[in-house]
Image 1 (cartoon, one colour):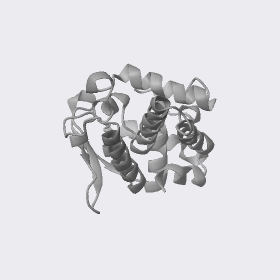
Image 2 (spheres, one colour; image 1 turned 120 degrees about the horizontal axis):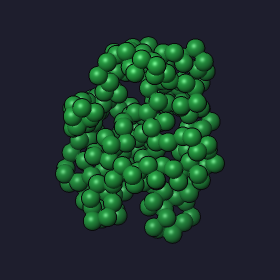
Image 3 (cartoon, rainbow, N blue to C red; image 1 turned 90 degrees about the vertical axis):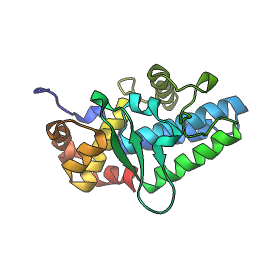
Image 4 (cartoon, rainbow, N blue to C red; image 1 turned 180 degrees about the vertical axis):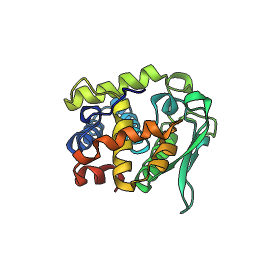
Length: 206
């Protein structure tokens, strides 16, 4: 990792993050039920990736029981097996908390299981989506939104990391949120902070 460097083209701009989410919302309206369902799931996928910084493997593995969204206290989710098999808590902002709650209620309307062991993103037969399926789904969002092919769902992680660091100026907190083994890895995000517009920093976290 000595030569690893985070560059500006690895994360989304303010307008791009807005476009990603608006595309999902627009595509879910006035469509047959099956298409509406696909795009509501994609909206939740994009929002979760942008506002939590989870790795795609961590998103795929999420179960309802890993989400702690009740009450007015701090809300968080548990990554049971992150990189290196490590467990960690990831704190969630209010908007993401509200949207996950709505999504779970929608899953109930779709008659999907919302038991504690059920996956947040359920594919066929109620099984967890594979990471490949999530990658493909996110690529469809990018394609529909007309965004460059260079981006992937991992770009959301880079976006989140840079934005939360710009807002908090707390490397240790960002390290814990992302699950980095070394704070030196997290420090790479500081290299691009002088290039950031404050409005971009506020897009995801306010």
